[in-house]
Length: 236
Image (cartoon, rainbow, N blue to C red; front, side, top):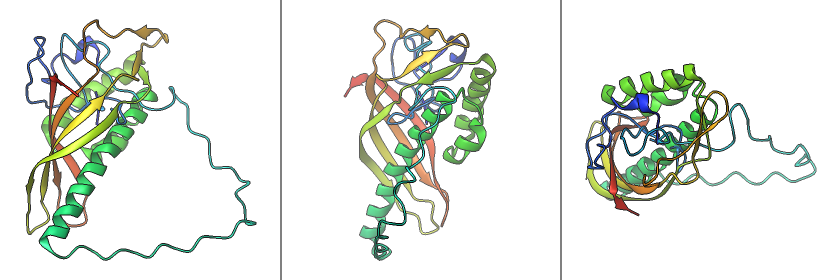
């Protein structure tokens, strides 16, 4: 995003089997606030095979569309007055931080939806969120493998909070925001191709901290996740 996982993801350097934090190169799988890594993908002897983050419904399901009864009989609300664009350095910083935090939440939500639906169409959905080949390479391979194996998740990982630990402005639109985020995977369940539950490994934490570097990729472009580091030793 997501992530919590299968044994075949052990090559993704996320968390050691001794639960010592390492720099991750993959994002959590199947999340929402969580997405999700998440998902993000968490790789560890502790987190396998239940480390895939899930999202909202179940495989192949979709949310119901808005009721048609909210019809023309109801008056249309007035269009909101657009807010002024930030101009001062302080305003621009505040807007960038808010956008980066929102992007992380959206990433987890999207990753969760992908995982809930059997990881199909993962590239179209998730490539726009990844800003580093160290993330999209191994994570994409993992998602493709999970899709081929018929794996899926239910539930959603959740970003419970996020705090700014660093900010770097850039006059060319390549600002970066560092965040410490508390992510809860407790609602995520993982299933194999037969629909059998893959139980969470005993002792694996379900709620802990992650470090993120989120970078703006130039003017009028999306924010991307460039690095992700889980800290399972830090409960939250």
